[in-house]
Image (cartoon, rainbow, N blue to C red; front, side, top):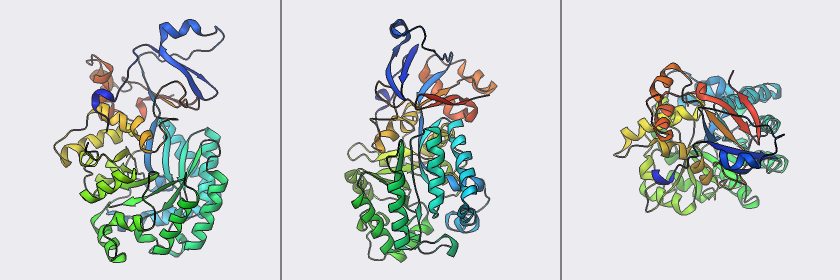
Length: 418
């Protein structure tokens, strides 16, 4: 993780010039404004913080209707609430409606890119990418692969999962701003054959992503150990199938050992830290500063993980990540570091740092406009702040969707707070 002093660049009175979905120039308003043709419209956001759009590295769009479902840990929670919710996505119209509502919620929270799980149904992926394409967002998504230990109406087979994924990659990967992720749910719900076929997909399509869950819950760890007795660790299950690489995104990683961190470092893969989900399900505390240790740093991004996660707000997720850092170790997450993890750090982890995550010439024009005085409590607190840096911590502790004044995607306003 970048040192705090290297995490933030500030322009006190800045101007961002955009054309055809990209930032063509940015810098001091006084220097750039005279270069603009008088006919060019200028949108002004006084007393606001203009940030790169937020990036969510782990979230389930079909689970949005099941958010805030009471009283279970991971495995029974899946059986009682999530599997019945995901079964409804065999209906294309329903999938389209939830995908649309989900993307609108992301944008309302200033999130412009996310790594998204769909369901086992191919039409859930089509619905999601259609809605993303309509809004112009850069999204990563994929069909869940699940051929065992799941209800009959949510299982595919190793072959149908492979064939469906191949067709979806051909249909959507690199179509505009859409990117595909091969998506085995987790080792418990895929046979070794299915995991190996997922690895074959990555070999045949080396620029697609891979996303799955890893070491989230102790009962899950025991089940994986029982199902894969010849594997050295949970991560090794995926490694044997060829699923651990530079474009791999592993959700959670709470119970990884030092050898796992070393493996992740050398492979260049990403861990998605999902604090609200881990607290809600009682899964445990992710050791962020162990993961990013300077001698063998592992890429880390933040994830909302709705529906176990309790909010799609990256501000709220940053705030909970701070609290988890207090409980999990000696180091405290600084606000500048949290914002870096939600923007430039996540983009770097996802190998998208030449496209998103920063406000710079040549980058895609995805922006989040934050209001440090969005609520009376925030206004009272930030009135005492002397610098922009001072405002970031109260924003991530007290902020939520109300703190997002506007969201820009691909150079266009896609959300404005009423």
